[in-house]
Image (cartoon, rainbow, N blue to C red):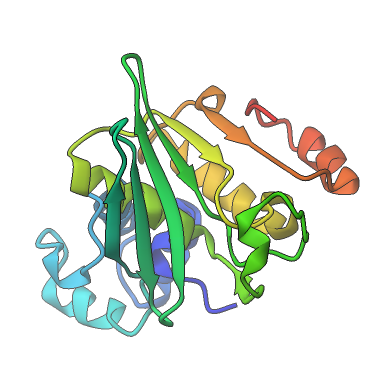
Length: 209
């Protein structure tokens, strides 16, 4: 997989920075840009030397744009986000008195075939990368001006069918140097992929299942 820069762990960004001949500390500035400032345009990171920005432009950064938004009477907002390849995913923002919750998608389509679920009506296309799941959070925060403090992996797709990228997403969104969301504020909903439920337990993440 050609990993997007905004889906890399800090230590992976450090490897990239060193590989292009720069000092390792620049990786923290890059990580901060992606996960605190919620930026994606490398050229906007003015603290980085121009020469480094030009080198980094050779690496992919996952994009997402809001294609459409529907608001219900209760105030919840359903967003359709367009991905780099033209696929569309759905994420839903729900604001309560004590928290702002976002329901995120983990795949384009779904293979599970649950008859009660609308996600399975669309043909399965592919898994989402961690950066594409993160972009749902960051785009909605920028659009609403509200901090997402509760995340539910219950949108389109089966999260445990995209195990590696979902685990990466969880670790990135809870990184203290980034968004720093509490793991206890993340809930993962599954149709019941038992081997991966056991594996999730072995990961030792304090999320809700």
